[in-house]
Image (cartoon, rainbow, N blue to C red; front, side, top):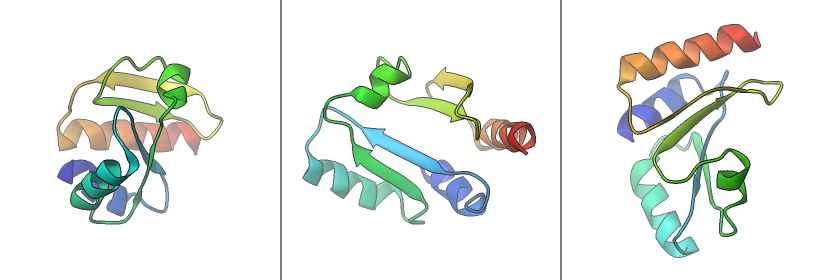
Length: 98
């Protein structure tokens, strides 16, 4: 998550980073978010009814979903990716949405 947090800070003026959590309680989610998202640029919340996960067909975490400004899902993948791959995907998303 440090890589994602750094990218969130770098791309803050162009991309919104959102990190919903599930299967937890609010206090535990807040504590974990405070540990992982030091930049303050990642919006997080607890999806207690798992609506966001259902909406995007996410069966487990970690999953990344890139959504264009018109709310179209551009790309989604399970698991982790390296900084270069994430940066390339974000740059492609910006170019598509621009």
